[in-house]
Length: 639
Image (cartoon, rainbow, N blue to C red; front, side):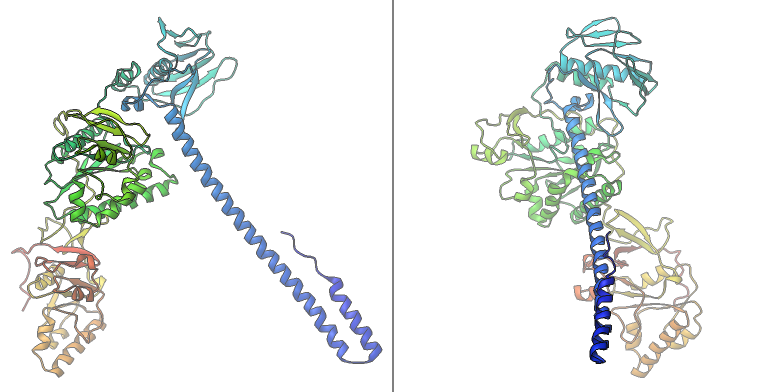
């Protein structure tokens, strides 16, 4: 920062001039100028310095923003480069999962041996020979990967003993050799070093790819070109969402189940999970429920659909926060976060009954790509059912038998002369190509040793009192945002409580549950309050007040107020909030007749249920059910 110099001349010159004028004229007004002019010059100097400092701060802030933007752009570019490199140099496992992969046969000698610590493919040049030295899983994996990728790029090699070589001079040697340019040393499950002839070996954090027997077997099938036309889709950032469309009886539900079964067979629950929304009574997705990847299914026969929509939105937020915490922008570079498929059969009926679900599906279609949340829907015809904001973000379209060729083109989003054959479908992945595929059989979906997952994105709604079963508190809270049921706790240290509800809503039971195991004085008259030491419980307070004269009722309310000020915890029940009483810290809201009455207690709109069972209400903003009454509950002190 450059600050302006002090204006000595600007200060001194007016002083000298004023003194000369005064000496010549003898006027005292000249001395006034000797004060005002230098003052203005100094003020201007100070203001200039202030502006200079402000401009410097703004420049520094602008530079900081530019640096942050560059860092963000660099990170995004690095992620994109990693993704592009992975696509250009896929692993054996990725190739095994992709039925459409075709060996490049491009003569390239820089081939994949594994992956680096940053997630980029680890490339090795085999043009002048590579030796793999050592024993163990790492050496085997590197050797298998180099042999496979060498064959993919250079064609089938010649083999002789522990050597694999091509006519171009590229070669692979298992063991020490002086005829190669690069030596990869391994020990156990680690790559120890990579060295080139004439240089010191380099140590790094290279990781071998998975070259298990199953992966290698499927990959070699792709390598030899024995690729069937079986429907096979992979969920990733390029193909994040899938649409199945077909007229009634076309087999779209079967194709949906076959695809999800394929994913559950190829991926572990740590990589892939799904939830189902089946609006054909659960008939379609029931076969998938025994997969450990299954996190729950809701049908049109359940009352939990709003809870599922809430849980999906909460999961989107949770994943967004997790990626922000890790400072990454996409699940493609995240570890430990499984992809989640939202599988919806008969989506038209689902959206007809729950129009608000349009917003949730639209959010998944827009943002699910980076968060690893994928939309998989089946519909008879998407036009007029799914919004354009959803359809526009679904690149994978699977079209089964339709009524007209115009319907086929509407589903695929492009013209085609092909028509779906019986037992088959037309597929496009958004790349401008339309392929014919056959729908595979669903072999043992969910059968065998698979067990249903105990994890769920949502918990079943609590609709009536539940057994205590050794739990703390006075009831269970239905915590939808966190997908769990937790004890509802109150202690005297929390303050006074009002229980508000209609007749028969369980107010007395609630007071008993709140004071269970505590030393309580049950009050029906003002004098009872004088004997209360710690906790006073007043049941049906409004009925008691109605039975008293105006003066007696006022005295009773005054006695309650004095008891509260003397640190006696007061718990009351009534059909409505009592005028004349100071507000209570906590209000347990039970069944209310109208939404206005419900909101008057401070309870949120979402927990309003005029048909709630006795003992079901709202506590601290969440739905709560009381523990069911038992004969062992102490009620002897109730007058």
